[in-house]
Image (tube, rainbow, N blue to C red; front, top):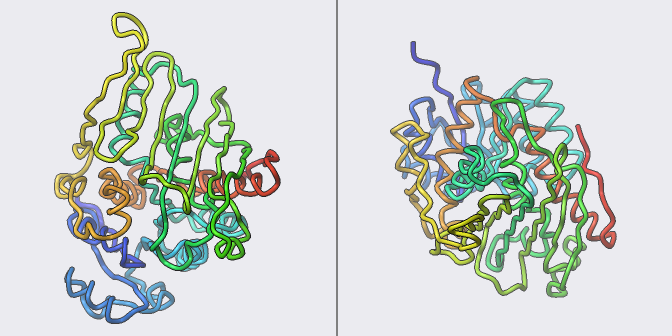
Length: 377
């Protein structure tokens, strides 16, 4: 007997429109509705993808009133993530939200409490933990190839000039999940109920962004660099973030220092990752490695989307290289969680921890490097 298809509404159609053809092709989804404030842009997207006119919403509130919508996938600007996720859960919808979960602690707490109360799925659509480079490193670790993990490092450096208006002056660590998440996910096994979480963080700010940006969020730092302790382990991770006034090609990266084999994400777009081997005859000799695609983990109709991008001009792809083929994995894992076939990863508490590392890191940096405990809700 076939299971019911999940009727999905996508909110925010810039980056969000990339997911429409994936939901349309997924055997367990119905790409039901879309939402964007601008009517002309809404209709252009709807016409392009064949979304019926009666399922095109300029009002998010009206969308949430539609009883046929099972789940919303939120791709709105960062300041709206928390409030829109809260409203969707209150309306009885499952929620997938692009990163970060929110930028305010009280909103994060509300999302966790509402998810527990409503029993609806909440997941943060974190691209890096479904990117092929991460999946490759995770597979090596799970198979015992890496050995004992000794240290983890994440780095997300990006020049945000030219991006929409809420970006200038944003504290770098308020958008830190791309480098925080792989450091915690690699030590997790959600199928067995094991999720590694950060306990506390120490962060230092460095440099200074242009003066006109500083008053917007009250943050002066060009770079923020943090270390955090991972609960239940003897492992510490270090993450670095920059958004403005730093000369560096876009890099979303993750390195694993381990006892037998260490993994280093490529330094420059177009290169291959590096494995460092320990022990004779390859003692300490690094080698480049071709990372395989992991489309085989997906239903056949959406496998092509690990390499297919319909709008390669969007800034997230011009700078981000297509997010490592992660989009169909995100869609599939969200749908399987909604259908009860597997736990959401990251679920609400895990998404909160990944996001709170950055929020608490910025608090630490503003306090001169004071250790900040990460809330547990």
